[in-house]
Image (tube, rainbow, N blue to C red; front, top):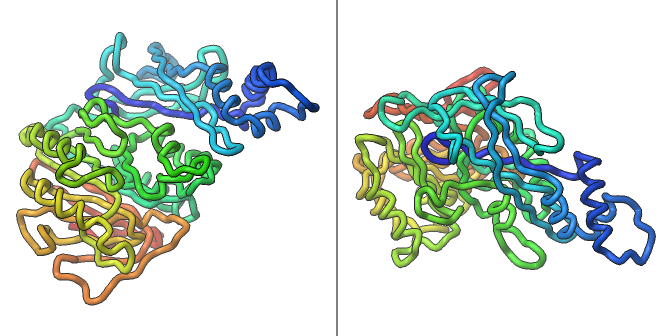
Length: 413
């Protein structure tokens, strides 16, 4: 979601899947390199010169989306930006982003199914895909269902989580971070994107960074894949960074907080958070939702007290502005709190929900005993959640375990 009446569409053009493209890029790279041996083919060349191949690929294609409200008549078109990155002998391919509903074409109609094709204006395009735009922002657009997942990875459990998530029929999805678990091995980003694509191509996802998005790139730690592969509405909300931002959908204002960006009271993120929350019109967006990766409330044996200083700085701010629910991940298990504030049950505080049970390869984490008084439900099982905003005063949270073959609500509140 890219603001009122706008959607961002991202995709990858990869030379491993397009021989003609790989050959054109390989020829261009070869022309710039003094060859001191036999050229063994465009794929070999791309491995020897990944950055040059990356840049050549970006010059060989355009970023075009054709779209419309009927699959046989994609009468509108929009062009966008493209980038790439290389690490060691890996080239990302061309990473495209196109914004629909901005500029001359005008805004997209709310709550409308659009069909679209992505590709190159002079070359191959995808099959016709579709998504439904969000409704107008405001309480009249309730009820609205959000899907929640975290720490997904790309295992059989991950695939099962995605299947169950799709079956829950969420209108949009929030992923609380730790996406691909590439951990520096960049081809895992490609396999992750292929796993997620059947789901992300039809429903908008909002992402926030987890610790596994920080990777080694050519000997230095960075967030290159996270920053290059995904689009964030940072400019629209004044954060100007992909590590924290906010957006509005239906009757909700959603704040995505950065556990791995500076967050203390003297930080830019803290100042931005106060500005952002002060601008919220609760008559327009009666629900205030916060999202981060590392949890403030956690009775699991893993990741204890990692962001206590973040909670000390920001929990009073969320409490002051009346946040309703706070989602996190990082811990590979499910846990839900009562409404709480400063480690105690408090009916004026938000509910804290840890949903880092998406299916990653590191496995599940157990819990400490005794269970704290603020914790109402916890279980080390894979699953996903959905938050149904029913009206301006009532919402229904449900958590679903993967191992339940029949659709069962394992927890709700």
